[in-house]
Length: 280
Image: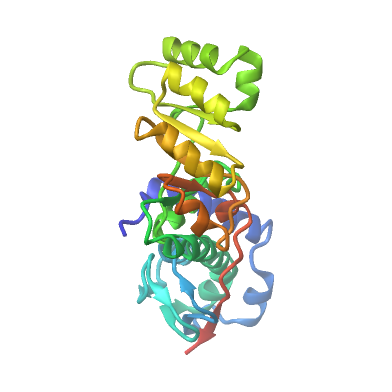
């Protein structure tokens, strides 16, 4: 995978380091480790998963001390097994220890996002559906988390409110109807902006099909209803299913024929992949 542009990543990593270093820096390491002491460490996975954030971890050490050299052996998107060495770092011991927690925080969290994504992407690989993220991301980490979703074999939904029109239930309530909401969006959003509408029932879907759009979000529908919805759409809209989807329920949802399955917990509740730092 191509890494994210450094211009996007560096401010986030700098903020994390500044938060950790506080007003005095690493008083533990600076008190114990000599300034000229060197060391070498390895990033080791304690469990099976998918790597994401390797370059971010490397950047954390680089920003602490540019003399630290990092070699990534399992880049983003790689499968790892327990005991696998994701990468190694060598250089000034103070810098290695000071940057350790920030590097591991990013690597463990983002690898957890990738691993969670892969658990669904692989389960539904026999279908046409793709697993997508949402805007339910940790503030400040959206670009990194969405990159991790790609590493896990998923696809990205919109990055922000300015990407596309997504008309949800409250928009419809304020506008008065699906038809009115779509008409207003079409008149004001611009001809290059795609329009997606959330529906909860097949009757709402029929209204949407009459007015037209680019995509439909089929919210909290069971697999039987999803099949009926896909048949009604008949290829006229991109179909997206959403609503409390888990690795256990994703297969039935995907087999309904939808194009996308959007899953919020991939980013807002991802289980950290257990990765440790061992001296070598």
